[in-house]
Length: 229
Image 1 (tube, rainbow, N blue to C red):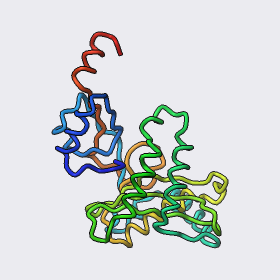
Image 2: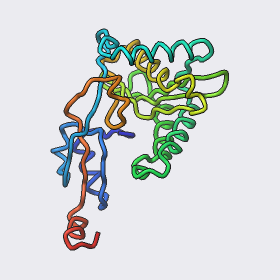
Image 3: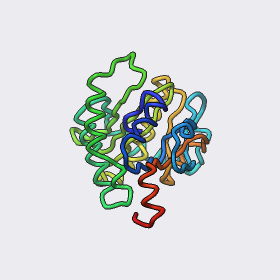
Image 4: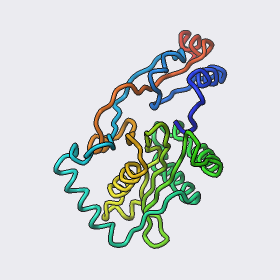
């Protein structure tokens, strides 16, 4: 999800060559079956169809909250796109947000920062995969941000964060709104919210065909069977 593989076969070879158990929480497609995982599951995923009037699918209450966020933020915040220093801030906020949770080992904040910075420095307008950062600024202060992976007409929200000091302005809602509008204006067909976190149900419709999985070498499986893990 952070650094997409060139093909399912390449991903499968890499995962099995590690010699350790790897748990992928989400983000795999139906090709997961070709990778020979020990187990897999399909979490709830949500997606916004950007080709029509996507706001018509939002509840009345959600649209009301959206108007409030726009009114509170539009007067003094501006949107900045693709500043590498913003990626640094975004990853730092993400790591702090997930610090101390059970999923901490899956977050890989430093891996995200290093990979996204390196990729964004080298990507071109013709790159089949592109990463973009969008951040809301109050003067020079960052208030919220998102890193998007764009591929095959889909913009995937990978790192969505906010400065909690600005919660009274609903910057998180406004950041989502701005990134969705940006993706639609850029010509993408869908905005993929991924799985987890209840707020995503307010923005997108359920979508099937996304998976998580556990990849476990035979030697590690044997340790489980004998009660050594």
